[in-house]
Image (cartoon, rainbow, N blue to C red; front, side, top):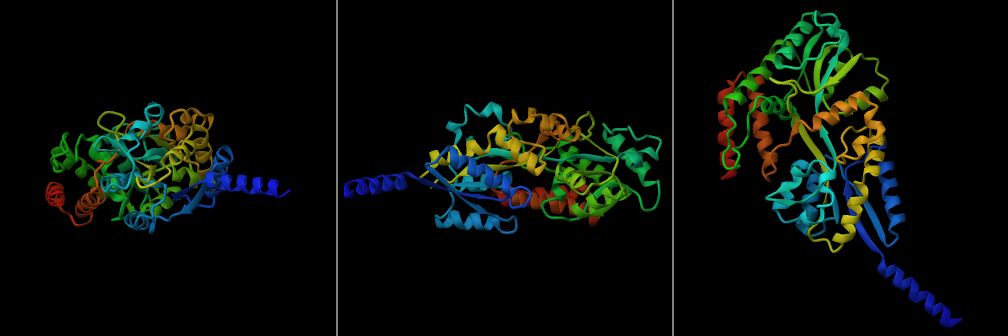
Length: 400
């Protein structure tokens, strides 16, 4: 009997010793989606009984600071969810593992790798991507000569129809224009900036070329919409007014589709790709990535967890729960859930016609400089060319 007990204790010790614990930090805390995240983790643990996952929730209010402190003190998690804007920052500081050699079998099946590529090394696996499209109010267009089936495909189309909607009545606006809202305003300007053909940096990345003629044209156009027919508010305020039938066009993300569905909004709307000089135009792209701590002792298990979470079936499960439009998995995009919804299709098409900001460690500071330049033009009557030249000077000083 003692012999049997001894054997049992040894087996239990071996089993306990063989179990690997993975620390995963992530931001999806909404009650609508958190159970799905937990379900995916539970399924992973069932499929991999030798691996346990400890899940820690972060908030957007202080999550970035918590990650910085954890990496700096050597207590960072094995796997961490990062916004695309943060990857270069943590990659440049040596905190993220280079997973380039592990993704060859996956690279063609997922989108978004460019946002994780810093100095030709891949520091994150694309999970859920995001872009913005044009939302339009059909009922307001019906009250103009354009008609409810009208879709603006050029900048002139957008400008002219916005102006006509503005003339319907005093409390109707053609365009939703953002206030000086941090991390929001520059994302509204850059689609025009890119569609006009402007660049932030030269092709070799050495020089800031912000104050170009196309950039000035884009700023002038955006200011015209703002001044002539803009309903000015923060993003939530713009979306509220649009859903109340007060605005003709706004730029928004797939979260607005979620609001319309969950709030049972009765609005006759359409979604369309970004207009341009030639249809379609460019939009802004970002995304959520899963990265591995370079100091982790469990990189193989961490990569296995990442592959499981980002598998097509789990991305579909996530997007259905969160009503998201842009899984990074190309195979997931072929699911009937996406193909049967015309609005989700708009987002999937737009993601292929979108650009992401430069993948550089200082981007979070550069975006603020660009945002301030847009603010000065919209709210302080600064000249577009002068404002952009001043922004370039600040960016040049930052990069020295």
